[in-house]
Length: 219
Image (cartoon, rainbow, N blue to C red):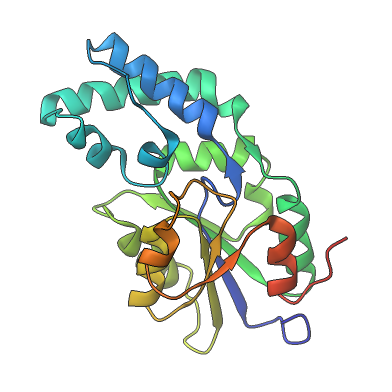
């Protein structure tokens, strides 16, 4: 890819792919559940990080108004306490910069709400390294819808070489649905065997592996 970079667009999942947000996310959700009188027992990152929060809360038995209360407390706590705890995985900023130097373009695609995603992209220092940042807003209620909107809103040419990189089954399934070249981020929050359930996919076990899969020499 390094020899023909100008048509390359990389669509990056955020949590578990670009950044390690497990501690901040789990702390915020645990706080929100406790404050609303619900149990936080059994919370694990694999259930929380990646899928939309509403679905996670419904599996714990919460209903609409309860979900709204927990989600708002989660948002406030995360913005006030969690933003500074989220960090890019080692090697990620350098990889984005190197790809950019070769003419590639980047867009973040995430199930996080757009406002929090924008704040996170800024606080982690990744916003200046990407061309766009698309999260949940305006009826975009699935990863597939987020990715479709990103492709449309970024005016990505039909002849562009598109690569989707993500760490959860929903990423793999969306990539297959849209017939995108998809690489699974094996360092993320997927359960054992989850990535294979999304369909045939190349797995990068580490960020260093991703460098070589994208045709670059790891420094």
